[in-house]
Length: 423
Image (cartoon, rainbow, N blue to C red):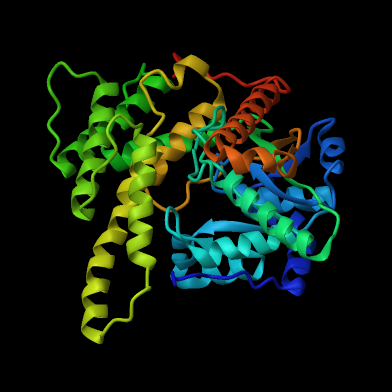
């Protein structure tokens, strides 16, 4: 059995968290608040109290807290799935909170039977809705999605299958199971340039950069990013060719990190796949090795396994580094020079150069929208005869709805632009 962490829902703790949530959002999350757009609540009411899985985009490290606040607004309690390694953060204290607030672990890419069984049970019982982020990773991009994994659809169909068996045994009425797309869009409520300038100055100090008197904000940001790139190239032993562009150098560095990790894990990366797909393959292999405890081991075997597991755990930082810069390219900020994009870039650099959780630059409004629920029970007969096709159809539907809602949410606000030539 894999090293599974089950949910240990504590009604008392969940109730207390709901009471203190406004204070937590104000003081711990710098005044973050969630705002439902018109029509979202009405769409959610179609599936209120019914079995289902809530699938939000995953752009920010504070998404779990935001979804908890959203669930309170929607009047639903939720369980949620988290990657196994996050339960070990903060010497296991993070895992204690997750489990008692209704979360449980999954080892990505592995036959995590206990996790799958728990998912089917939660959806089949229908007491709470399940939250699962189908991107699988924190994208750190507020405008677009990373390609979705099909796991959300697969888990829902397994729950439908379990319900179908139960209904057949009891001659009961078949009840639907839904996937509910939810789009989250983080925006700043006001001008946060002063806070961003403070962070930019700190990054320059950390990397030994002295900005020129006439350097624009974009130029200063670029200088920090290039210095970071040079440092990482030296660290990994990657020597760029003289004619390579910044984009090519970033791509080559990511590729080197991925193939180096694959070599250490003794696996072959799929050819022709995106770097994000390769990250997922590596994450799956790492999780499977670190958290697998299927076979009984002697004390010596345990010792040897832990030595290698310690080395493998070190690769998580490498993969996080790749994901952190998976969508970064030279004109990332210039093509949409909003303070949110500038802040996104700063946070990536801040996390890498300074470490820890990046600072929140100011009060935020998280716009939330709910898409049209996808009736998985209605699709189940077709799924039985064409599983791969239907999984792709559902995942594509979910991806399209999330992308469309994110674009619509962008139109709801007047973005504050930062002039790329501003000093």
